[in-house]
Image 1 (cartoon, helix red, strand yellow):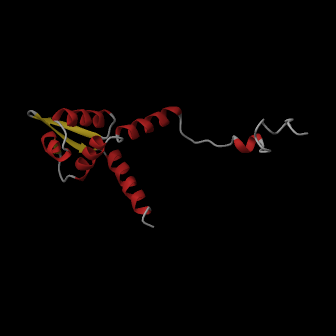
Image 2 (image 1 turned 180 degrees about the vertical axis):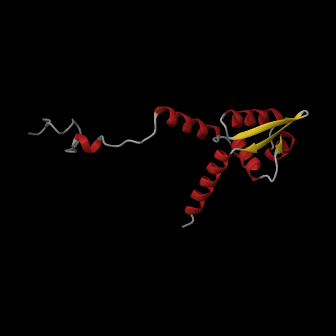
Length: 124
């Protein structure tokens, strides 16, 4: 009868069985999803993303003093970006005298490589 539900349908489902509409899922835990979203948020600004790109593509460790002119932002903005990249495990740092030097972590390099790979797929 019109307007009545059968045992396998939900209201407004237009005849789709409940099992068919609710079987989507993924294998990540809530903690893994939150960690992934945090990494994506970290890379979600031009300054942090470009800083990571410069660091990852450099032949040697990168000094903070090298990033400021390349990024075109203040020293404070560079420091904040590097701090966030470091706290989220995308760069490692070492102190030498009054300067800090940064390198990309293997995870950061893999993330950048995947982004590069997906960009080349758009050309197909």
